[in-house]
Image 1 (cartoon, one colour):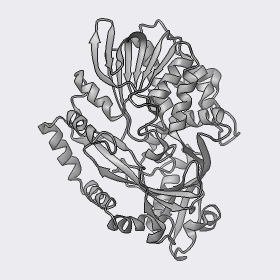
Image 2 (cartoon, rainbow, N blue to C red):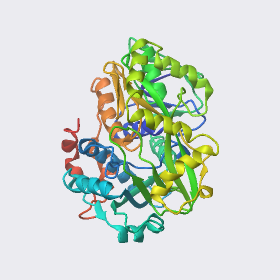
Image 3 (cartoon, rainbow, N blue to C red):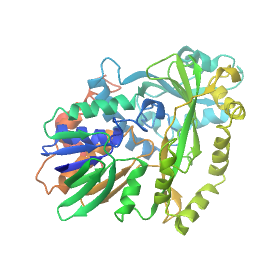
Image 4 (spheres, one colour):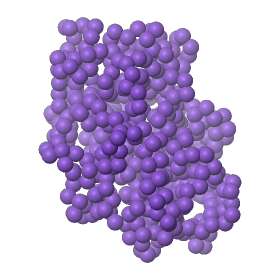
Length: 465
């Protein structure tokens, strides 16, 4: 097989699928292919058991600065609007209360500052501070058994979107595949990407693809392919595997705990499963692993390719892991995987959310959790807290740690603009129509109606970057 396309997207997770949707439905590009190595799309990190099922707006994530929350907010509203428009029967998502919980005078004061002085109350009109009585109305188990003399406060919002990112990925692909310009190849593993005079040749287990432009949205493997083409030499990965503990029917929505701003990982939280409210998940834990995919020993060699085994990488790891906040966190999380000891050590985190939980009430969730590739910049030996994007000649590499799934449509919108530029302006991206189909359906605090004036959407988005 040898096929030629204007655009080839490598990777059938939420990132690649959202770009496929954006380019198939809102550009006039003649031919687009999505290539996925697994037998189905959304088989790895986008699968519902391998992530926290959270749509991150930045309102209750206390490791976000106001600036980061502003950027994440629009991305989350794009996806929430898509879900509101295309998922009326709640097959891809559920909408529940969510809150970040402060326990004790110090944490209560921190939430008060965040809501008022730091501007989060103004940025998120639906967010509101609530006290013990209202917390108990929404989440009885959060208050039950707690010392009545201990101060409590929560910042709560009804916009708690719990998302099955696997089903959402499939929805994007199904809608894109309605277009004659689109082909989707699963069970097709990319073996190499080589530049040509007219773009790229992508060799796979099922033959070759030629294209004018390419986007690699293959999670941790994106940096591996980038490095093979000479890009991203100043970046390595710190793969973090997340896991969860399960309990029965304790929470109605999402309850987050406060997170230190230096940590790029999600705060420990409890929430009801997207498809089964009788299952409560607690986590995630965060364990460093030398693999690019959870439970696949074959990806150890892929990790070593990305790591590089050079002095800059080792010095960057040493600098990051010697941090007095991060190192104890990493060591603690290693313990949570140990039989018997792990649940006992994790129990206090669960009890901070639901005080009445006992050891016998929780169990490790077998088969849950994925790998998030945290980005390390070896030029300044630092850990990046955001998504990484490398733009080369007619090619984009997306490496998407949290909140990559939450901002997938915003990322797709940006990449669609770039891809159109790659193709010498022969095609156009209808951004106003894209926004009308997504964020245009997000209910606002004031009216419950669309969140943007879709007639002027293209002008609004132009200042995004």
